[in-house]
Each structure stands twice: as C-alpha cells, then as structure tokens.
Image 1 (cartoon, rainbow, N blue to C red):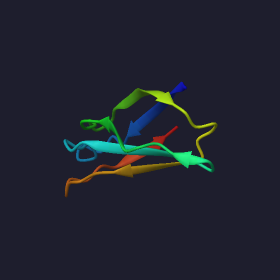
Image 2: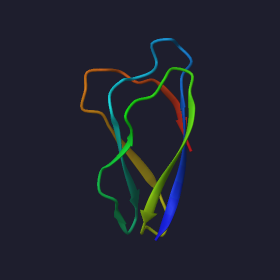
Image 3: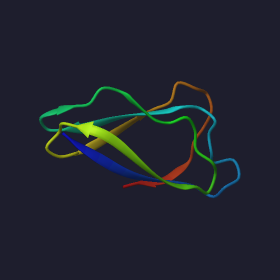
Image 4: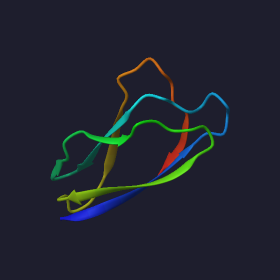
Length: 79
C-alpha cells in the first residue's frame, strides 16, 4: 500500500472554482479504487497538492472525476 500525490490546478477565471465536493476514482489495468473525496471544493486559480493514502494499485492509468452538482469546475490539469 502506498500513497498517491495528485496536483490539481484550477483555471484562474474567477468563475472556474467550485463549492461542490469533487470525488475521484483511480484506475489501473488491474483494478480501481473505490470512490474517494478528492476535495470539498476548489478555488479559482488554485494549485493544490492532495495526498490519497493507501492505494493498492501497481500503477495509475486513468483518473475518473465525479461531481454530483450542477456547479461547474474548470480545471487546467491534474498530474
């Protein structure tokens, strides 16, 4: 089991942030994690480092993001 660090950059447009919770699923060829809370929201122009503990995947091939809100979120990248 190992932690995974994600860097999330939200666009600097004043309306790019979100107050809605954002959830993530990490996916590899051998399986996927359960849905986890990535953040309770993101501010416009922010660059946040988020550590997700205890991942048992050998690699991460894809990331699925979910928001259960009509709110929008304009992110530049996740690495």
